[in-house]
Length: 83
View 1 (cartoon, rainbow, N blue to C red):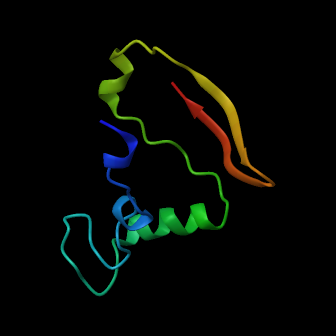
View 2 (cartoon, rainbow, N blue to C red):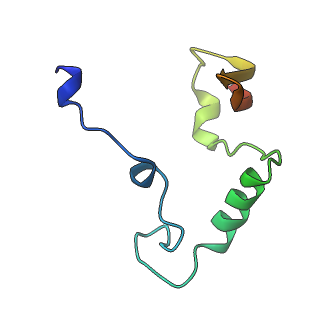
């Protein structure tokens, strides 16, 4: 498929509307736990990873430690760790 045919996604396609709950229903306020997590990310706080127990039985193919990504003068990713 040529690149011109690939549909472009916007941040609204990726990040859920803050007024919608996780089930896709709209409401007056977002899920409190999700809002708290997003607010911590916005403030630049460290967020502990959430690892599904099923993943412990799968052998890792790639491991990344303390990865940082800069986009020009702006740092886009901070200390990413993946296994």
